[in-house]
Image (cartoon, rainbow, N blue to C red; front, side, top):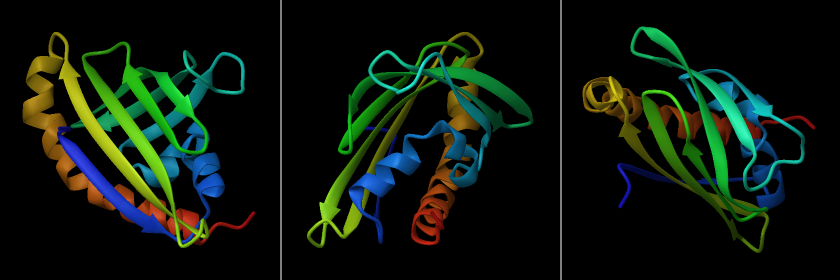
Length: 149
């Protein structure tokens, strides 16, 4: 079981949800701690592709690299932190509901600390994520349901 597990229903198709949540340029729009994000290397994304995310954690901006270890459009994806003191393990799923007119987005998140991250994860990161995850859910729902194409 993951440290954090959330689920939200949105008025958007699975394809639209997939296009939005897997595009790193949108991360700062719906993740409160994300300062910036960019795909590293060639597109399109897939297993082995990496994303560089800078997050505001505590009082610092911390860059980290995440790598796709699972990529199954438009159903599910998994990202694994590969560097930095705080390494996230994220898994997302998109389930069609209402005959595919709407979607259920399921998100699971765990952390592993390396070096000073062993102190940061329990003292700062989990506390921050506990507050931020529900905010991120609301932001994601709002962005998906009020996007203009």
